[in-house]
Image: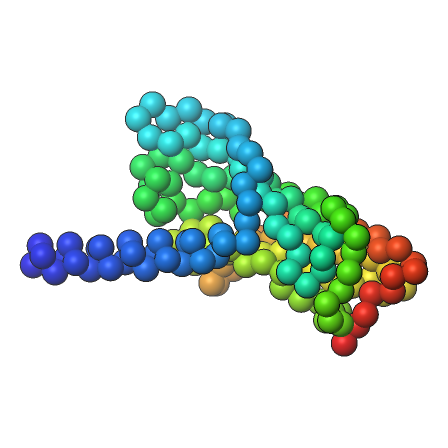
Length: 163
């Protein structure tokens, strides 16, 4: 029985690791600060990651969020808080490879083992030629109303192409 449980635990850990690294592939960690000291395990932190918009070259979003430490956090079993903040900026010439949807998911990152995700949605404010980015978290059953929004105006000469 112990061998079966051990094999199952190792399988779940391997699957979680694969999912974790697949969802984090687009992120580049910019920095972190500790918020709660833990003596023998990782501290609770606030991390700041950069994500380039995959469909809009020249726009990078910086997302800060809480990351739970402790033994559960180290093993990926902790559920991070639903609080996040976002700031998107023009980091180069803005170009569009193809027309954009009026609203589209840009990022979906797992922040708990199974049930909770951090999401970033891009919306197009066509009359103002502006890209609006919203971050929030959701759960399988219920999400959190906590959110953050930012906007990136696009030069009027470079009209945002819509589908």
